[in-house]
Length: 85
Image (cartoon, rainbow, N blue to C red; front, top):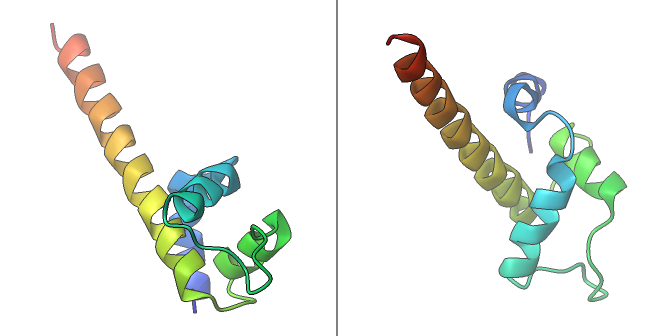
C-alpha cells in the first residue's frame, strides 16, 4: 500500500493527467480488473492516495513516476546546458 509520505513524493512529478498514463501501462501489460474491465480513474486515484491496495496499479504508478522523473531531469539538464552558453 502506498503511504502518505510516498503519495506526497509521487505527486511532485505525477501532477495532473497521470491516470491516463497509468491506464496505458496497465493496458500494455494486459492488466484488468477481475471482471475484465479497465480500472476506473477513481480506483487508481484511491490506490495512489493509499485508500486501496493493488500491487499491479502501484507498479504502474511507480513506472509512470519513473518516466516523468527521467523526462524532468532530461529537460532540466538540457535547459542548464542552453542557459550556460
